[in-house]
Structures are given as C-alpha cells and as structure tokens.
Length: 88
Image (cartoon, rainbow, N blue to C red; front, top):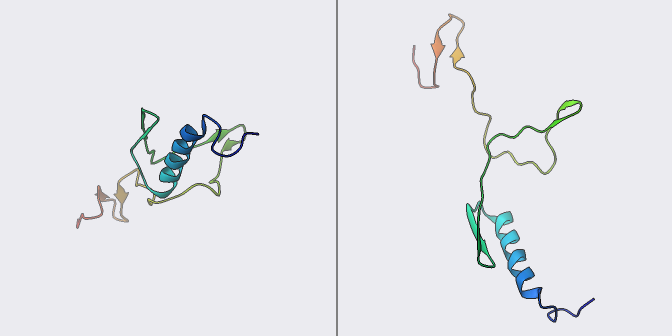
C-alpha cells in the first residue's frame, strides 16, 4: 500500500471525492471532474421491478416531492376537476 499522498492517482482520486461530497450535499445538475463534464439527470419517478413484482421503497430512497396526481379529480356529483383550483 502506498503512503498517503505518494500515489500518482491520489490527486485525481481527491477530485472525485470532492465531487461525490458535492453530490451528497447539493442538488447539482452538472459536475466537472478531471476535465470531464458530467450532466446529472434527476428522475421524479422510478419503479424497480423484480421477479416478485414492484419493489417497495428502500431506506436510501428520498422523497422530496409528494406524489403527482395522475388523473383529474372526480367529485361525488360526477364533475371532473382538472386542477385543485377548480371551483365547479
């Protein structure tokens, strides 16, 4: 094992460590490490499907947004409400 700081790749590794720390602390859309620009895509919905069907949430999953409505609201009189601001 090389002593700390003597490995030629230590500087490059330090850049990746800093980038990983940045990803953990903020919601970055782009990172540059070692001259390469990485574009980050944030997905709102992700469904993992296994042999037994859809997987439940994992402890590492974060939920910063409430579930988005998929269908318009239908009240007890049969009126369709396309958003929460409808008064009809």
